[in-house]
Image 1 (cartoon, helix red, strand yellow):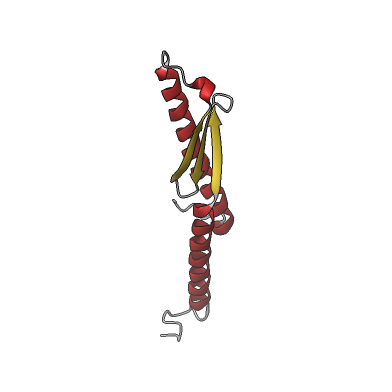
Image 2: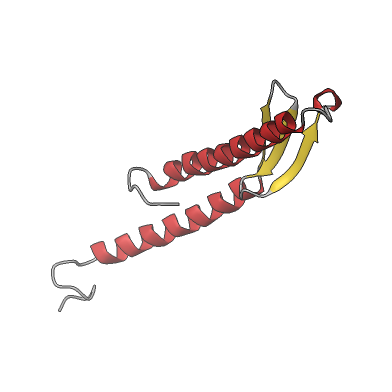
Length: 110
């Protein structure tokens, strides 16, 4: 058996392991960086604004006073749901975009 542990593999296996370890470190770094990044998403022309961290944790929700109508609570609820869903989607898109820079075309799920 060759020194690399597999016949015919030589140093290729060691290089592959080193690249995999580097990629794992890069993935962890990107997850931490994007996870702490603040992203904003608004609905209703800015009537409701959600700030979310890249790790999909809501930081804040801002509601403009003029959209608070006691006779139309459903509209406010819809705006909040739209803003939160948009913020979560933005966090996912941001994480996926940054991860694709690290992993290239490997098509790994995150």
